[in-house]
Amino acid sequence: MANNTAGKSINILLVEDNPGDVRLTVEALKDCKVNNKVYVAKDGEAALAFLNKKGQYVNMSRPDLILLDWNLPRKNGSEVLAEIKSDNNLKTIPVIVLTSSKAEQDIIKAYDLHANCYITKPVDLNQFLSAINSIEDFWFSIVKLPLR
Image (cartoon, rainbow, N blue to C red):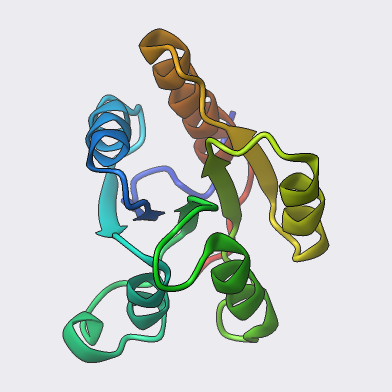
């Protein structure tokens, strides 16, 4: 299926404080069919600094996709999502909430704040890798992402 990712690298911002989940996600994305560059922010404040190109992030590329953990230090996922979706310069970036939380109130809040989808991280390694591959297949092969 043709899309606008052919021949270009996809920039992904992974907002995750768990080093094990960072490592697994980055490794899974290395095997993607689509060339990608993964940037990691370890808390909500770092994610917003990255997105707003502040401090050490001044020269960073705008991400094409954000993978956002819900339970983050400093600023939690709902605060980060609310700021992204209320900013005219950022709101078109698709945000996938990728979290261990299965709480119905978190799911509802994420969609109320305009998350593009909500995925609960599987505990099983193979299921986790399968979830990441599904994200890749859908968001990089089927969906047409906005041009920067």
